[in-house]
Amino acid sequence: MYRVYGTSASGNCHKVRMVLEALKLPYEWTEIDPGRGQTRTSDFLAMNPNGKVPVLEIEPGVHLPESNAILCYLADDTPLLPENRLQRARVMQWMFFEQYSHEPYIAVARYLHRFHPDPASQRALAATKLDGGYRALAVMEGHLAGEAFFAGGRFTIADIALYAYTHVAGEGGFELARFPAVAAWLARVEAQPGYVRMPE
Image (tube, rainbow, N blue to C red; front, side, top):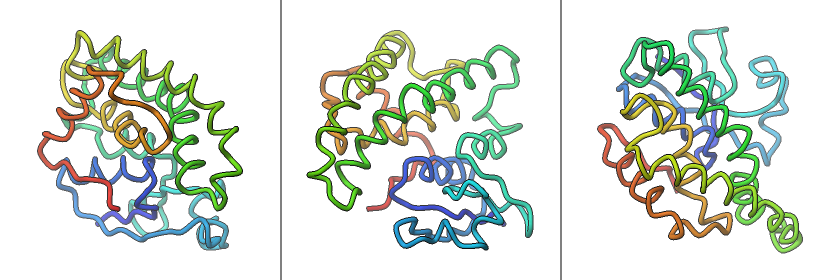
């Protein structure tokens, strides 16, 4: 039985939930509230010295942080992670893209709009994230104009990684209607067996 220490409204945590549900793996969820200092306790820092969610408890005393590392661990030897060397690298390519070219703009803008204690004070900073986020969405749109999914011609953890914050990008001020191929891909992801919606 896996245990996830996570925040349900976090895209990085939702990725982990999506993989667990897609693979029908048994797990328990421990909700963590970073805003109340729950990622800075000595017990949490013993699991992840970086003080961030999510953390996967594989077995007592064995913990794995970082969302995309968790996805790779859970998906290993399943259809969600191709065996072919190049196709696995394609999955990694898009997961690195998500962390370096997508999440720093789209996820941060969403946080500033929705979760910051004083969103009004953050409007100017949130606005600086729009160009980068739209660049990432444009790259995705270009790929999805000719492909149903991001790697290997099928649904993989690359799609899960990119879905998590893309589907809530509107909460960060992004207009997803400008990207019809992305919108169609979101619908395809949501039609996958085991799909689970992000909790409110």
